Image (cartoon, rainbow, N blue to C red; front, side, top):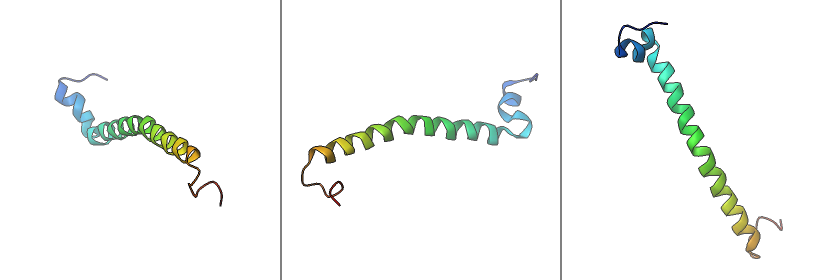
Length: 58
């Protein structure tokens, strides 16, 4: 595809909102995933080290 200007490139012939929106959602999820994994890992290690935690015995 050839675009006459940057404005044409970003508008993507009227589909820019969907194209760039999907890129933004994907980027946000890719950034959130390692953070969530690290948080869950920390919580699991903390509950495994804590003998009074209620999750493992029931």
